[in-house]
Amino acid sequence: MRIRYWLDIYPLDPDNCTGEGRQNATKNNSTKGNEVMHIESNIKDLLIRSFDEELSTTDAARLEQALTQSSTLRTEFRKMENMRKSISTLRVKKDPGFADDVLARLKEEGKKTLNTVIASIFPKVAAACLVVFLLSLLAIYFSSGTLSVDAIIGVDELTPEDASIYLGYR
Image 1 (cartoon, rainbow, N blue to C red):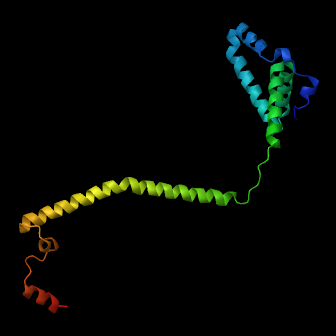
Image 2 (cartoon, rainbow, N blue to C red):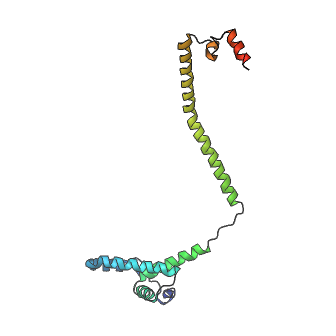
Image 3 (cartoon, rainbow, N blue to C red):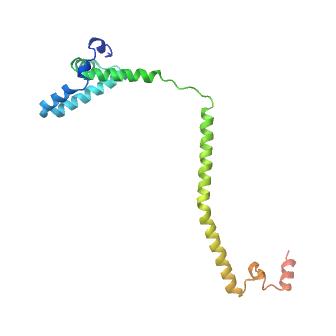
């Protein structure tokens, strides 16, 4: 059973839209404050559910009674109903190229991210390579005593006989 007709029977009371009556009742009944909050929470849950599904007869009766007694609840009901009407009238313009545009943007972001990662790693890799190169030169210097081109490429101790043996095995 839907509750939508209650607003026609019980119009909004603009003088009592602030909920002062509920606040005063809660102050006067301080021992029942938690119970009142719990009941109000249940009624609001029922109110929200009434928009989406059929309520059972007992829940519908509880909501009807609450709407009859509370102009604040009727105000909230009206606001929710207006909001749902406004949202239901919204339509998204269909764009056939939307998926392609999103994929193109994702590819661009992926490239930017890859380039950013490469740019951030490059100085570290270059520094490591430079350290390995310098250590290699130091090892060559200490083993051969010179940094000549022959020592660097490893042919400083090669003799012509070694070359003929190497070429003979080919």
